[in-house]
Amino acid sequence: MHVGIIGVGNIGSIIADLLLKQGHELHLINRHVDKLRKYEGIANTYLDVEKLPEVDALFLCVKPQDALGALKKIPSSKHRRLFISTVTGFTIGEITSYVNDDVTRIMPNIPISIGKGVIGISYSKECSKRKDEIQRLLTPFGKLVEVDESLFPAVTALSGSGPAFIFVIIESLVDAGLKLGLPYETAMKLTIETFRGSAELLEQEGKHPGELRHIVTSPAGTTIEGIYSLEREGLRGTIMKTIFDTYKRALELQKS
Ligand SMILES: NC(=O)c1ccc[n+]([C@@H]2O[C@H](COP(=O)([O-])OP(=O)(O)OC[C@H]3O[C@@H](n4cnc5c(N)ncnc54)[C@H](OP(=O)(O)O)[C@@H]3O)[C@@H](O)[C@H]2O)c1
Image 1 (cartoon, rainbow, N blue to C red):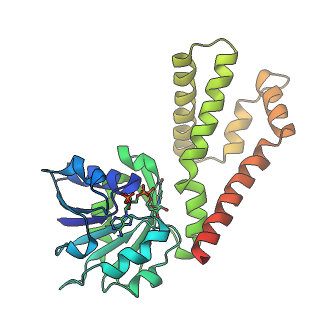
Image 2 (image 1 turned 60 degrees about the horizontal axis):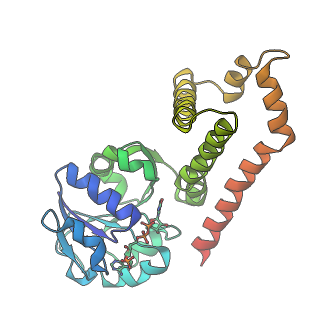
Image 3 (image 1 turned 45 degrees about the vertical axis):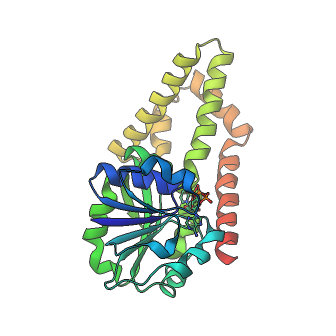
């Protein structure tokens, strides 16, 4: 498949690297040449959106403030391309007013770089008929979760920005391990495996997290002491507020 990517920054380059591995013919556009250099000889590269040739699918991966400038310059196509936008705050309706394509909006997160991401996805009415095609293109990135477009700011807060919050939590657990005398590598391994195992157990058992938490919490034991501290310090509220503040910012971006 001929795939175009406008904006080869953080997300665009991750998408490009994965699509190259899948054997697609790529057409990469970035206004500064530095980000294109690593693709010379393995993909077609361009400095200007106006140079985009005919493609089957086109990803828009620029910052919200650059999206209008890029959209206005996209050459029209003889056929309806699959148009996939990662741009925060830009609606399918807004994009459709600039391109004559079948538009899908996605909110990926960075674990897509190893095929373990989660992608919030919303299809335009026209795209709903091309779901198989879109899913074939995106499945190597991770799991797709279809949501109503009105819920995109919530998806942005929870899973789009989520890895950053998880990394901060992992860092603090590792630091706690260091404070208790564990070597860094040991603390990191114990933390990562605890995250992985807990998430996989939760998924496999299909239970509410409170139920599994209860199993590990014996009367007058160590865990209840930690839970008591965690609740007194307001961790639950802190995390909920973190997601809510991120959501409010995503809403602001959408409005502006
Ligand atoms: N990062 C994430 O985890 C994440 C997750 C989900 C969604 N998103 C969304 O994905 C979008 C991209 O984010 P990002 O973090 O990848 O941004 P980024 O690293 O800044 O990448 C954007 C790229 O687009 C290029 N660009 C901007 N306008 C252009 C134009 N008119 N023509 C050609 N190239 C142009 C920029 O070029 P130069 O820098 O060379 O000028 C830059 O390389 C954003 O809307 C963001 O909200 C990001």
